[in-house]
Each structure stands twice: as C-alpha cells, then as structure tokens.
Length: 343
Image 1 (tube, helix red, strand yellow):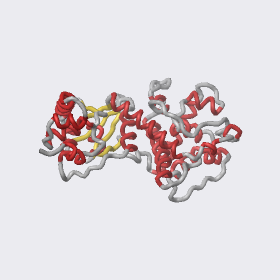
Image 2 (tube, helix red, strand yellow):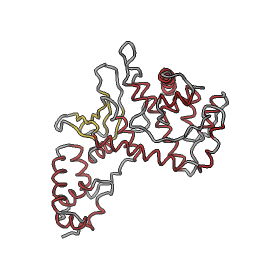
Image 3 (cartoon, helix red, strand yellow):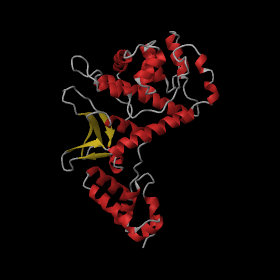
Image 4 (cartoon, one colour):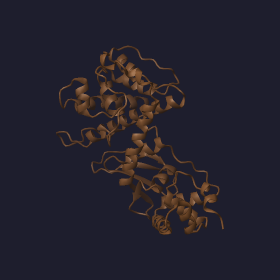
C-alpha cells in the first residue's frame, strides 16, 4: 500500500483539496482512512469530498482536467494569476459566457446580448478554462452539447475580488518607499490634492457599471468597443506594474507622466519599457481625457470621486469618460491592437 504523503507531490499544490483527495483515492488507490489521518479530519469528510467531485465529472472540462492530473506524463502548468483574473473579469461582465468545443485548444468569451451587436470575442486557452472549472469558478448547464457554455459562479466572483485585491496589494508593495509620496498635496498639475496612485478596487470597473446604462435613445451608453478599449488599457497598466517589479525596477512615475501630458511636454520612454504602451495611449488622449481615463480604467476610481478630484460639475464625468473612450478606441484600432493582450 502506497503512503498518502508519498503520493501527494504527484498532484500540484494549486489543485483544490477535494480534488486532490479524489485523485489520491480513485486514481492512486489511497484509502480514505489514511487520507483522513494525514489531514487530521474524519473519514466522512473525505468521503463527502470524493462524492462531490465524482458528481462534477459529468462536466467534460472537469473530467479532462482530472484525467490530466492522474497521468504520469502530465506537465500542464497552472495559468498565472493575471490570466485567471483577466478571464474572470470578462466573465463577470453582464451576459458574458465562455463557449468551448470539445477537442479545441481554446474557447472564446462572448457577450450573449439580444441587441445583435457583433462580438469578436476574447480567446481563452483550454488550460485556463479547465483550471477555472476545476476550482468551481465557472459552471455549465449542458454536458453533452458540441459547444459547451459556461458562466461565472458565485465562487468565481468571490475569487475575482480576491485576485484583484491581491494584485493591487502586490502593486502597492512594489511602490517606492512611502517618503516618496510626502508633499503630494502641494504639487501642481492633475494630481494636486494628494490623489493616491493605488487604491483598493471595487467589485467591478466603473466602465462596466457605466456600460449597463442607456442613453436617451435606449442604446448602451458605452458600446462594446469602448469597454474593450478600457480593458486593454487596464491590462497594459497591470502588466507595466508587474513587469517593472519582475525586472527589479520601481513602478512607473504615473504622476510625472500625466503632468507631462497635461502641459503638452514630450513623454519619452525606453524602447523596451513595458509602460510605454500606457504612455502612448495617454499621450494620444491628451490633457483632461488622459487623466479621467487613467483614473477610471486603471485606478478604478468611481465617477463621483473623479469629479471631485478634478473639480468638475456633478454628473459630467460620464460624458467626458465616454469621449475619452471613443478616442481610446481610435488609438487601439489605428494600431490594430484593440483585441485583448491576455487570454
């Protein structure tokens, strides 16, 4: 009889504990009582976990993921937290679903809306989809169709909040020493008043909340291209924050970049600098529009907060943000990069 502790390293640590116990028992022959002793719990707890996972194996994504975990030749790597966060963020949008066909290497995230507006979709690798399904963050209503459809679960929304919070905390930890922010209230330019560079995010982006509103004609206040452009700017911002840390550098000086844009000063970045993509977009938007786009798309500041910080009249922020997103769509379309970078 193989010892449960000896078999444990065969299953990656990121796999949920109930799935690990299922693989240990059904695929590797570990007794339930042995697993319970090694985890200091009652055998009935392990039994309930195994039965729960067995019921989920009707889902093709879950079944394939478990078979991969049980294979000795499996070398599948877990997707990064950034990939999981971006996938969950798109699935959390209204009417979003993941469509994936069996045998295909990737699926696509679509928006199931009755308006008939064309949707090019966001590609998602099969490995990422399997990880989301295995963790219970997405679930499908059909298990035998040629094209499977999945939607985000309440557990997936909770995971999204956790991933976003960890991402923001990671970005805050990468920042320079707190002394670098002293005297921020005395600075001139768009960040006068001591605006924080990083903040704890709300559950959804202000752009997504505004996209649910309708204009006077009944059409969405922000179309899908505008939302996609905002997501792309947010992706570039997150990659710039993480990339600088991975290379051993400090976070980009967004304060100085925005003040340069505000005063029409040239903004130059090294060719290999990851923050160059965000800088080019902000320079294209110009004064005013660049700040509202950065605040709402990157820092996830609410419209009311943005209006107060910038000294605007109430309810004027949404109009300026729409104008900024219209120009942002032109910027990405002109470069052929409106599609997602991650996924």
